[in-house]
Length: 438
Image (cartoon, rainbow, N blue to C red; front, side):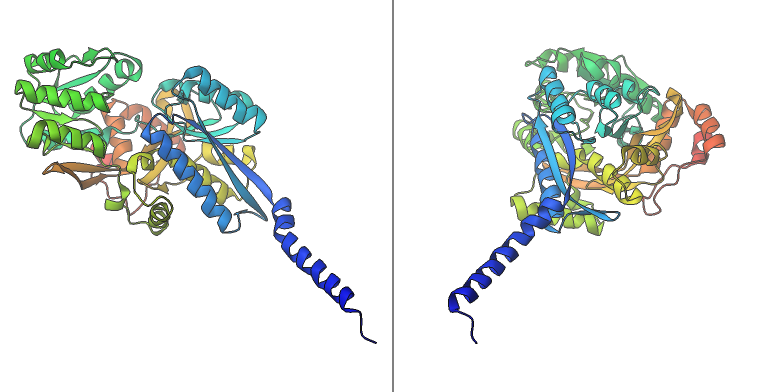
């Protein structure tokens, strides 16, 4: 006997509803992995960091989630704006920690490294962040690993200064804002690299952060007798104005601006013509230097998602790749497991702009691998455009920094007990352990 048509339709309808609900049921059962970040959306870098974080989450989730051990997680990336304000930074961090219940924070660009490291340490939050100040690498801070910094970065400056030295530069000078790392960190660090090359190093020139007219600063530079200057923390529009002022008074010398983005370079060229040609600086566009297949895929996905490429965030998301390596290598999301792994970081990790490796700081009596050396492309300005020029290796960054800081004996004692770091084979270096004693 045939079943009534109405009953058959009802059964079919029930099956359709059940099938439609299966993805929702599966999604509801899938665990969620939350990663937090606080940055400054008033900067291009901050905006781009969020765009990268959104892309990481969208791509991983579209592939079914993040497979970690026996579990698969939906990635929830929470990137908050601090508006360049310290109270807003604290509020955003506290929201991540106490309301969102994140166990991991990354890429805290312009979000108070000191505050971030202290809060993460108090609450046992794994943080792979960025910054420049020594406090975050002290032994009493145990849950903060600096994935992006300048301590192990003297080889970049050493390379640029050496190139200028070969062209005739002999007297170096740091020009930087009179606050924060501009006064406390950069002059000594960059000066050490200059001395290692063979420069006579002049006392730094400081200026107020809110300076607009750089004519008097340019006059001081010219009067100093320096033929090579490093602009230190004088980025953005400050760099544009300083270079333009030097051009206007006819100063002839070499400039190390550390970095200028595409818009800033265009502004400099508009004001000075070919004056800036031959300048070497950080090169943030990995499309001209990156060869790693996985990173090339991420760059391709970025273009498909956003259509127009902006290099401003590429350098500042290394923290995510360090954390991802720790999770994938341990197959765990457990904070204690990840801490143990990061404290003895075994190898370099590939990021958008190249290799990055966590290393110990025995000079701070800290034998955990807490501070990063990262390889970095150098660009050179030709005909008003930035072109890829050469790449500084992780090993060079590490060893040159140790020699520049006169810490060879300190690190030798560390290596005797813990062994020397192992660096990537394809990360071509020009400096070796034997060069430390030359």
